[in-house]
Image (tube, rainbow over the protein chains, first blue to last red):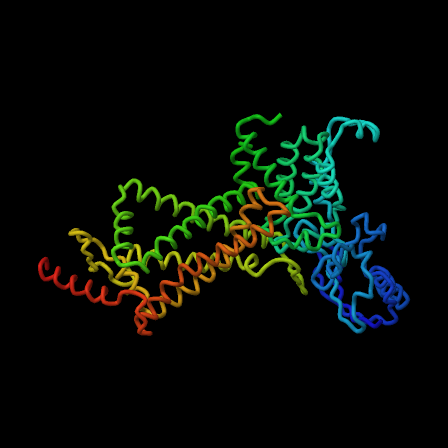
Length: 253
Length: 253
């Protein structure tokens, strides 16, 4: 395959970036998108140019490190697929592919296609945990949880925190991510004790980080590699309303 | 922080207010439409209805008007605040942006809303304050009591073709606004899930269309009666009103 690539190049947070054109030949349709970028980088290194910086780690679609907005869609055109699991056979020979970083004010570009997603860590650090020790794996199984609840919680827990939801949202809102983290723990008996405190603090941390507001487009869930449902946002909205009312009437423990 | 202020200043608190004022305004337009289509009955019906509304005790009339205007003001103000926050959350836009899921109605909300705001101002000046055209001298004999002839005012108002076209365009934007908003408010208040979403989306679309068709039927009927020669509305009644107006002016100059 021959490809024309337009890649966002930016030296650092302070520097301005722009799209730069590259030509790449002999790309195997069976290679992954990141292997295609590896090929480009090897070519650039051999020509003495600075290679393109991009995030990657497990390359198995489970760690949430890879990012990239490919032709305007985070993680590219393939549904429920991370960039590392996207293969070049989904592109045409001779196609022009525009590759940009995930764009949002709370995700500053560190270098080329790498963005700093520490804003997500901040949200998890403030409420994405259970304070009391719940024991090890066998103890977890000692508390019966109905299948429906366990499934819903597991659906939310599938979130790998990649940030594609923010990148896809026209408002750069993080509500699918925060909704997933809230729903994951608030649904379970181990997490339910702190559900009010959790949702209040996670939402205010999300606001402080400067993410936008959800307007219910549904773009986030549509691009999510783990297909986190919009239900988690409704769940977060519901839990936040209840928690706020309890808070106003001073019943939060 | 005061928990009430914390709620109002949070992203979700603003969205709740947006949804709740939206419920009031969406309910109002349906009621308003249902009242207006009485124009297709003999003039006595809508004139009796209008007279009843206008003879409500001052506290009730201005209480209702004040409440509706307050809801509108909050809805518009928060629309500006939320939209500005959303724009700030992505200072640098994508060079190649794509959309997977978001509907045109959902993406156009700020624009349809802004044009509707101008429409509402015009509409209030046109038919409530009546400063665009003079409708002060339109008497109607309601069982011996001289009341304002709303039937004639609506008819005369829509004989100006540019007014009718503006109303029809504005109502099509209202249809779009409702098609997204009516389903979206359920999501914001946390009472929507994957099972209900398709139904609520269809219901919202139907709601928008019902309001749209109800409202636009009136200017279309006026134009067809006045210029198309179709006897949909009572044209002779308008002439009778104008004759009555002249007679009354002669008696009480």
